[in-house]
Length: 533
Ligand SMILES: [Zn+2]
Image (cartoon, rainbow, N blue to C red):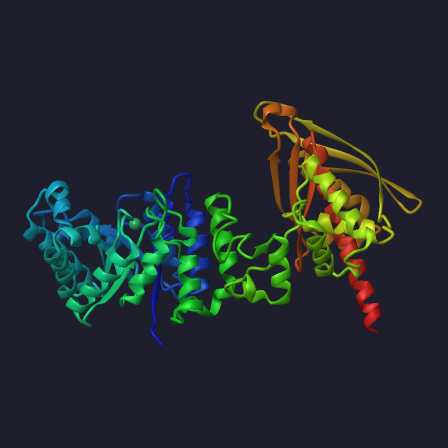
């Protein structure tokens, strides 16, 4: 089976994306996580030009990666200067990485107008730099910048730049579509021609950008034409429209093209890798992202839901579990009784398709959606709603009320929050105080403290996400607010929703649902066990 090396440049090209800035600590965490995921190369940053990147290389040198080859990125030496005295080349060596990526010019336009040197000198710059680094024991990857544009204008010269690198000992020459303007058929044709010309002496790689929205397609076409090294970033983050998205590339290589690559055995971690990088990049995950997005296997139209229930292959191109994702049946007022019925069945309720309860659930759903609730991302709240309609809902606790104080004592002191709540469990009334770094945190602390005596299992519950959406921003601070809370007990994750004109009250509602859901889960499990025995 053909094998392809995976080269990640999230920390270098990805970090050039608008709105993205990784701290040193973020970079170290991402590098270690991608290493464990099984990538072959992790490009850490620019050698020389950036003190943060050099510090990153120093940190990584003390505790090297387990599997992946850390790579420092830099340019060929400057024109008409000795290689050994070139500061970028020196920095590439000082990074002390096992591999280095050197970019050089392969487009005559760039040689003439940007480097302002001769075509011959440019070839020497490539050969000297690659040779110098090879002599010092580095694996050398030559990134031929603007290769495809260069090839279209002067194929002979573009190929000579690759040959200069290969003859000087480069381990891999990478054809870069730096401007992202090429289409898949062009990438295929040019890559195939280059590989035929270069022969088997040197590996050929691809570095694609997404400006024509074909970054992934271009990468796959290059592989089909014979490339054995693919560069990209997690989630496709990068300058302008981004780089080729490694998440989609990996899934397609493994699942569709049956190509062997090191990350194949970790494919089930793909979604969590994507989420991890989004989080550290401080970007909202793209729900529509193929394979890893929340919506990638979400079915809403009644007919699709029915089809997937009968045979998942009818509306799913791969099994969601293979990439760590999951199928979701969406419930909304649009979906009608059939989806509500299937959702109830999926959630383990025994109910008749044409029962009045199903219609009752749908009508409550419609009412709540009008008020601003949204259950697609808050299935636990929806499950509680079904349960309240279908079964005699036994409340685990009654809420008396709460009070929250936020106090800032001095300008340079952080504000502190305190919450007092009253809850009733059975005949006992609990009055408790909780503190937190914010009002929601304080409420959460007080609620747990009040209930722990009765339900010690809620100690396992942690809030893993908290999201706020303003529903009618034209009302400014009096707008309705929807709060989504995600919780986990280490085994399961669930999401709950609250809506109010008051953000604290909306948060409170979602928090209470979260705790109720945990107790409800335990109850269900207890019920299932007693049925088994
Ligand atoms: Zn790039």
